[in-house]
Length: 76
Image: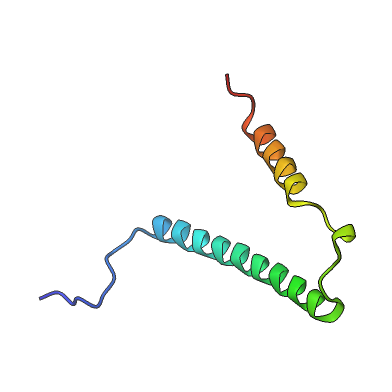
């Protein structure tokens, strides 16, 4: 009779790749959380920046779209 609580047998290489992927995802998520925490701390200390000290969202959007287009390359 088999034990239903045991994980299925996985080859060591597949397990290692899965673990590496999870660790990479955790690192990216932690970095994003740290960035957000730093931003919130800055707002708590200094208040919300005025419009003259910020970049309009349209400019940020267009810049990011241009970056994505450059990464992807020209599609005919």
